[in-house]
Image (cartoon, rainbow, N blue to C red):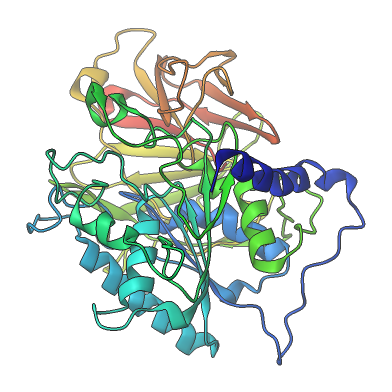
Length: 473
């Protein structure tokens, strides 16, 4: 499919997203009836990530008519890929591990809902699991295509982050390796790269995806060709959509990506007029899991014994308002809640566990309920514990669902440009500063329809405390 056609197909969802505020007459979402219920949706996160990244996306589907019990997010126990897909690696997962876990999730959702098919939506590595499952099912004999109506892949490196057979060919993300070459093998009379029987869509950036670049800078091979073009995530046989300027994660988690996916599944634009497509709830119930780390990196296994306290905050000062909403040591399931709050109150999550910093995570108000507010404690570098007088606290301003782009975004800490965000391809998701302890600190992020402000408090680094201002969008 040529680039011009891809760009033209991208215009419809982008225009729909831009005009939502002016389209009060937009038709409502298709109703769910006993004879024609809305299909369940399963969200599949990427490499090293968690189900929590899909929380605002799930809110968007809910706000546009999808029942909460038909929205599910996979939480892979070992989310990081092996260096070599064929070699066992502690704390890492193979493509087979991911495929079998997703297959079990599909069967569980179908059994719980009584549906015959699901919609699968994935980001990055999550798309690899989706493609592998549809092609091969729970085992290489008979795929999962019959159980899937739509597959939507946001930022999936379908042709690899590099495609050099001489460089670790068994890596899952090598487009010249056996895994991706097998998935991309021509199928059907048109030589399509997608498994027949499922409606496929890919969503990609024009040139701002750090893992779809012709130069190897972003994968530690600066100056060497990757043999992958900007259109690496596109697939022959799919509806390939481009979201100009969006980054590797935004093509899955941004409101524009939601609008494109919603239109693909329903045939119409979203019906909400809220700029983020989210309708706030009056009563918000939150829960989630605390996960941890191994020597190989982050895991989504429950971190039993971690301590979590959650406080309601004053939006202007970041000061705590009253006693903790919850203060507990989590059990074997890692669950830290539930708590009840509202859609107007920002929150502070205090997470601590042996070997980690006491992490004070400040979040904007949660607009709707969620059972996937997953937490991970942070580590504080030894060098950061000795900031000296006037700079004895460490603050991290983070955007888990996307990267910071310069000059695309406005990213400010206490009214000043956040440091460490290079110009060009969006490739960093955090900015770190040092401040005096015991003071308020303000993170401000603006990008298109997104305008988010978080006020937190600073804590002494020498006592192993860390402040995190975490964006919802």
